[in-house]
Image 1 (cartoon, rainbow, N blue to C red):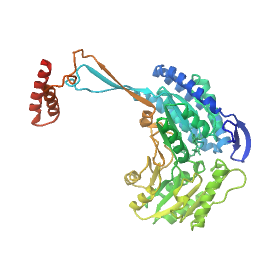
Image 2: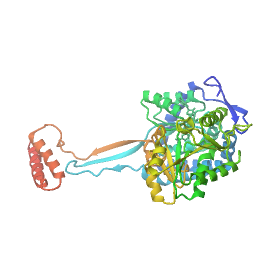
Image 3: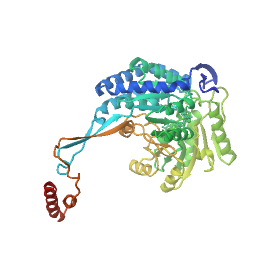
Length: 510
Ligand code: NAD
């Protein structure tokens, strides 16, 4: 990002570190009119029948999948994702995402009728109708620049919203490619793409959107939440983490090693749900560590582990490693940046003091500290001893025990014998606790955050007055007492009925 808010973004290939071009930012001053255009487009969109909206969204899914190889190419050029990883995590998952929402959306948006007591509420119909929020803003990071915006754009559009999408300044080309596909299928301005950095993000919020869904760092989330709070705009914050994998004594060792290896090093460790701490039963920690280090040494830079996003990220990761080693940690492999590009090798350490940033802060790089525990209570306490709480994984042959143990850890997603892969699933909730954020994307709980429920009350009772309207007479009190007693079980029911009827007649007479 250049110095002025509106300066063009400088595009860098993280595989070489070389500048490959630039891309125009959306001028900050233009953001207000962009948001206004989205609001107009959203109102027209919301008025269209759901089946019609579904047809357009289905066409969007088809158009995106048809551009699969282009998406993978730009993910490689811009983020350095190895192609197998780009296909599986960003493109295959898109198909499933669209399929899920198109299958469930009619039921999920169905109005819910209340079952009313006809004595208390004669002639009344009450239903809760989900309505679009209006304009939903997405402020997105660079690490999964396709699936992260799409996991909200798909349900947001189906629910009748317009979207203002601000891609990361480090993933502007991915954002531009998405915008190109949107333009072929969606009505104009239904999804507006605002290119730029934090100033453009702040301008989107200031323009008066109806919700902000922010995915990114804790610092960014805090700034966004502060700005949105001033404007009373609701937020969902998907932030960083320091997830633990707990490897129990009875784990299938080969799978646990391969799973934790992938959990720590896929996407070069730049995943909010990366395994950033391996906690291993002391009885197997030696065996586990030897096997994991042997496999980590085999991972190929470029093919298995892409680059970090920029030189600053390399410096941050390396500083955490150096600090831990200086304070007594043992480096078992990796630990040195590689010349050319922003690569950092798979790095494994033991004996990391628990007050080191490598143990307490999100590393967001391919670095795995391993520590031993004695007993399940200690494993849970160690996993929970973090400011974050996004995911945990437990590795064991006893899946019931693993599930129970994982549920004791304070976080939003728990895995048994797996890790890190459920984020793009439309039907699964994604969201954390503590500094990992608040609010949810994915699942019906995420959809609830994209609609405003409207309660609609329609009365076909044309009596002069309701029982609870004026005048407040003793008969009203008697009737109300009777209704409460009636609702209770046991001997009070008969007296309740008597009182209620007596009160009712008294009310009727007055
Ligand atoms: P970041 O916070 O630097 O930027 C994220 C987005 O916010 C970018 O679009 C940026 O331009 C914008 N932004 C930053 N500060 C802003 C401000 N003050 N006002 C408005 N907009 C602002 O994060 P990043 O480096 O792009 O992403 C990496 C982080 O994202 C990691 O911490 C990672 O754990 C987290 N992440 C979380 C999830 C999740 O689901 N929990 C998923 C992916 C990434």
